Image (cartoon, rainbow, N blue to C red; front, side, top):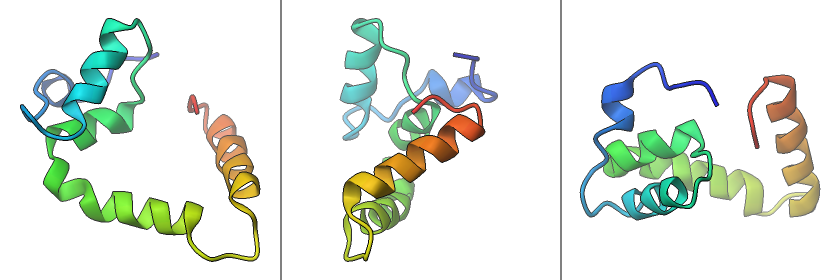
Length: 84
């Protein structure tokens, strides 16, 4: 995975934030950390709205089942050369 454009964000997660532990576990396990996770770990309070929005879109009421929405998201990510 390409390095992040803002390495100071990647290297300074909020200590004790809800995402910092997940990022650390992925790094220790040798897993590529999705770039958005670094943003969530850096400023967890400011990403709450994004997280709520994503959950509403992906899991909220819809004529499309959640699995199909995940498939659309994965396809879109692939078109954008983004690992999903």
